[in-house]
Image 1 (tube, one colour):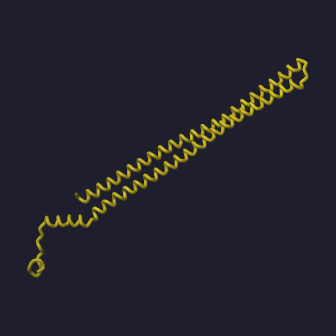
Image 2 (tube, helix red, strand yellow):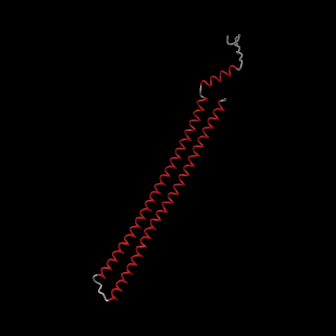
Image 3 (cartoon, one colour):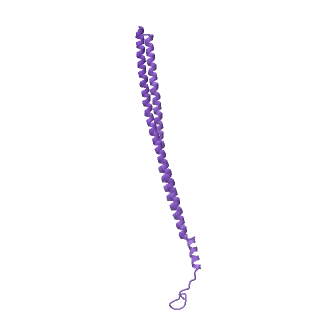
Length: 195
């Protein structure tokens, strides 16, 4: 095979291999970037849900506190209408109702805080996932660049070794010389071949 053709094929193969590595790396990097953007979006949703959970818990606690105050007012009116003193058992009923309502309100706020914490934890996990995906995309791109460089260097190295191989070049030169006949030049002083 001709040395120029060998060199051309080696370089073309190296370029094709390098282009494939770069294309694959860019594609993988873009995919990781899209997944990271999706994870960031999920983190924002989780953060928003955490805020909503806290707001809903506070609204429910406020609603229950208002209902408890209305109940306490009705109890006092009922006791007053009955002519009973607001001491002893009637007072115990009012205090028990207030305590039960206070515990109920605290439970609502606690459940809201747990939901908020859960959403915040999910948001943190999504942000960490996004960071990992971005890092993975950069690493993939770097690796594909290194792979492409290695392909180019290997291809050029192979081509240079074929062209620079003394055995191959000597065999080519011998074949070329043996296929031609040469007449020895004559000497200006007479006789042939520098007698």
